Image (cartoon, rainbow, N blue to C red; front, side, top):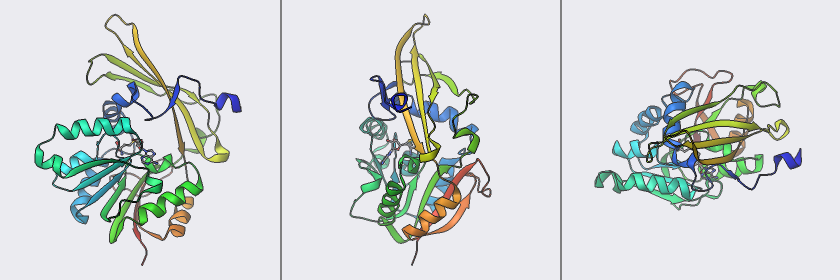
Length: 277
Ligand SMILES: C[S@@+](CC[C@H](N)C(=O)[O-])C[C@H]1O[C@@H](n2cnc3c(N)ncnc32)[C@H](O)[C@@H]1O
């Protein structure tokens, strides 16, 4: 079991380095997100930002998928991420924006668990399950404390997690096939992606998956292959509520999706939080 879990030499952690998977992040998100309970997330954050005002912090900002539309709406947005590769793509997109939009937006290399920016924010967001990259209770508590310390007294923190379908987070031989096909944003070649292995670890509440991405040439030949390992921690709502209580965070709202529907099993966990008094 332990040896199966060890990373193969060619297997990297998700977002760790420049990779085919990183290059297609925006294109893949655009194909996946609309058909999931995370549909409409960007519009949700835009509406909320209109209410909270600035400045806004996005932790785990990745390529700027959410931060850029917020800046385009007129908000001052700071994005932080652990991945230099994702930040490189974000910075490239920022450079192509109108100067006034680009000036409202900045991207920085930082770990959300040890964040210390020396300023506070009216709104902090962690879209696309970013919080689930904290893999232990200790890391989750450290991350919540760091985020809370960056909140203005009336500021809001939004966390988005998937609500675990319990039969999907345990070892099984009949896991649904997940994959897709899209066009590479710069080369124009077809790119396929597929979840090619699963090593769920229910005792540690971890989803561990290998995602294989291939770029295909015009004659059908495979030009590049990347295998990356995605490890996320899943938590039930009840556990999250206890973590929030320990962190001194009050739950303002708890939705099952970004349309504001009530919590529901196996959907999204969209938490809107504020620091307690
Ligand atoms: C699924 S992507 C989400 C990107 C963006 N928020 C979005 O919604 O498109 C997850 C991002 O979280 C980042 N990340 C993971 N752990 C992190 C940490 N401890 N601190 C900061 N960023 C982290 C990854 O590098 C990656 O860019």
